[in-house]
Length: 236
Length: 236
DNA sequence: CGACTGCTTGACTCGGTTCAATATCCGTGG
DNA sequence: CCACGGATATTGAACCGAGTCAAGCAGTCG
View 1 (spheres, protein in one colour):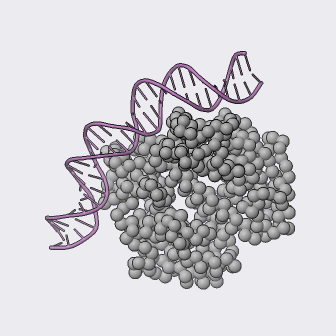
View 2: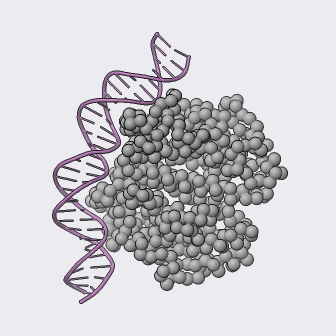
């Protein structure tokens, strides 16, 4: 949706690192956190951590899937492309979320995943899951929890971002964005209008008008490029 | 959303039966299909099959959850209620789907579930899942598959039913309804206007106008009360 | 057969889109 | 560090799709 969406695919940039899962801050919520030490050591030799710049594509809808990703830091958007229009953003994934889980059982990605800002991801090859099958110790339960997150978020998305006047929907979206900030506070990194529009299902122009109104009302105060303090109280 | 939504809760009607899972037609897709025979025998002693009339509520949002349900036949709607408006239908569950899966891990239902027509459900008490924990043989994987269904449906819902002109959205909805018919064919049981409206996020009046137009165009031909033949080709 | 509920249709209004022109931002390269 | 230029955001005006309000209609069930 931004012009950079197709710049980069996984591995095209040199910023790959060892995963170092032992010291991962989000490990308790992450996918592989239940593995026994022995399994874990084996598993994480195959995991690659990577820092992706904003706009890079992690994977594409309908691509053959060979890995699952965990968001360590940053924000991903999942885009469901449709033949007709340009598609729609159907979910946002923040720290601790898993992307591309459908790879495990379906072998194909359901969405296009794009980093909305610089993000740090861990890439877990599918083969790792296969090898872990035998020694699983609650791995599947962990996957269930991740799926639950997705389903819950999807329902909320539908109920809160697709119903009612645009102003309210954008208000709720900003609240969600604030929650998704890595340092969940009151400052938010405002995505491009095109993204806001694709999320709530309106045109860029309408999104712009609503945001402009919020700025005038003092609900959004600029503190840096694309960065605003969000005063949840002044939403009218 | 119909006037009968609150008529009945599970167990208030006498139509409870032994589950007879051994001969269940949808067992291969259902939740407990992977249990070993011994476990299975134990498990299904606790399962109760029930026929619910149209409009009955299976469970309510925020209710304490004590069971998961499998749809044997019929159609459920999941409603996400919101303080303000009357809420929104966020998913439809047809044969083989599981309802209330969140009970297992969260103990509270996320939606209100209502039968849209006479439906046959199997009620699996939470205690059964607890007892099965020890002897699980891929049960969690089974649950994963069900969650995947939910997530996939949610994404499709969002991309297809919340974007574009109302006429197109209702067209796609009718296609989905046709797929959800128990005898997946070209005849569909048309839900009340209020439901159609709640699904695509418009008013009853607008839904009515679109449906009327489709009838005139010959895309919908009445063959019985609430029952129509759907000619997918004439959607314009 | 009457009453009720849900469906249809019409006229008016308004929010959001569309198309178009202008302003601003921000990353780039000098 | 500044100036430039393409991309993004803003704003305006006309239009139109869907909402709202209100009235009449038709199934459906006692």
